[in-house]
Image (cartoon, rainbow, N blue to C red):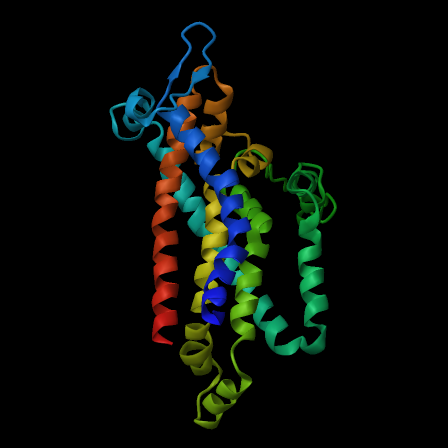
Length: 298
């Protein structure tokens, strides 16, 4: 009787989460599918979802496919640009967050909670407000130009907000770096100090200890942080709109947002969203399977 009640306990505890996922993920996803494989009103140009999967149409998906891989493939450069931006931003987040997470996990001691709180506190502010702050800093008469020109003494002025790709990447790094910091901190905090002491006792230097002990044991945190950072970045449109507003820095999220607000293109927005979801599903499944295998081996 006790074993049976134990077996039922965890499904019961997990039921609220399953209901939550069904209501706020599966149902909206099905609506997106119905819109993507639906039609549009010829007069008012509004989306007409088709709720029966047996009656789904592929006209909107075909349009997106042609704009990706057909003769008029103006979607393809945007997709490739988004991938490049995301890769660069993830690398930037990792390079910045890893030393900070390592210092917090190893040397902050009993103040680690306070240090983490101070690091995360600025990101509680609205994303829009933080991007607006960057606009004020990067505008022609902003603080950044004042610093690099020594208060106007040097004849140098950079228009940072004129569609520069590295400014968009910088904004992505700033906006999403907490999602990299926290998983890295958890992974590094789990490394036993005795392992590091054993490596030093065996004659390993700082670089060798990092390469043979710290880095391999922090890989789960790196992978988790990479996924948590890259997933929202792939659909981000706000950063490019705020820090660039140039077609040269358009990302997939901007295409989706533009399709949503354009009459008769809601189905194309749904098809683009499904494309992004399929691309991101591959690393998510790989990460889940890798964690399951690691747990079985341990």
